[in-house]
Length: 465
Image (cartoon, rainbow, N blue to C red; front, side, top):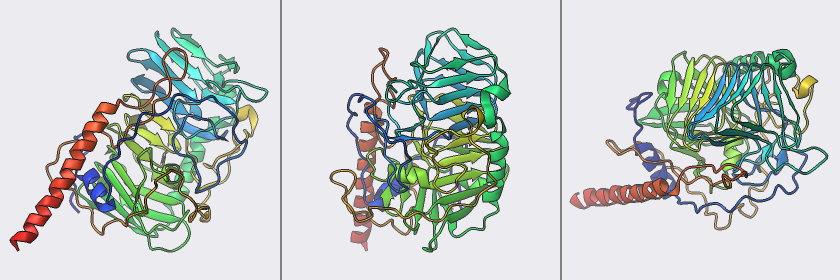
């Protein structure tokens, strides 16, 4: 297998162009999202597997499990925007946006809408919490239904509040020590190590092939969880991920072997003929909830660019550096730094394990969850509504993925594939999230031209024959 892109280098457009051509799609230009909607009512239960929501503004479901975990320190700087769901930090948490502004925790401007109960724990920090001047950490914004409000914050050390910490009526505590602040989450690092080892021991049920910047995961078409194995060297530098012959509703595990650092700049993801990483995809939430990447031995993971990484990340030994957005659980045993432009972490529980699944109510002391034994992927949940009316108006019939998806050589680097929704204003409401629309319009135009050029070149070659 050839590998033309290495960690830290600029990723080529070939993978995205190959995926678009393979799926018969052009890169969509999503319109700017509607203004922030009121919180309204949401279910006290979890979403039905296969019917997880896409990205929106309204809270829909309740999940008190850990969405984002840093066993070491957590830093949000640059122009990063928000972290959805319960954020647990074993060490120190620092919020220091480069130009000031709002960083949302718990509820976000645009996300899955799967978030902790109103007034429930949304930020737990074992060490100190530092908020730089000009930065506002807004916890549980707009959660006004029910007997409690906002989101709660528990800090084991001191709060250095040069900026502003807003809990919207939720409780806050500090100086209690890590054990009290984290509750049963103090042992969550051990939980993710056990789960990672259990998943890594599973035998593969399908194959993985790297070609250029594209990795294709091919299932066997059998029922049950789909398990793939790929080396760190083969996934390093990849940008496009295709999942094929995956049974409906099946949980997917990608076990990454080897102990080298990994850099990925996600551009596009396909699932059985559908492109699923764009915000207008009706299968966005489903794909994010079904896929998990298990980086058992990786010392560091970098998600570059400004695209969407689809699926949960389990990395018990790694530091994580993010400028791309993530969609799924994010569990790193080391430090996490998020510093992109408008990048976000969206909470999509993983359907393959009870440990990482959605939990509608908090359990255990301090709101923490109990620590179960390592679990194997859950049985394949059926995907309801497979023949029902499409979730989004105008949903097209899925186009089969082509048998090969080799990126074209020497292509320019594109902007991310679609425009994220914006999440409100900067005047006390939820922070504006996502990138600016102009780069995405340009990207769409570039890829459309490239697609036409590829087709024209193919016709000319056939004509010469």
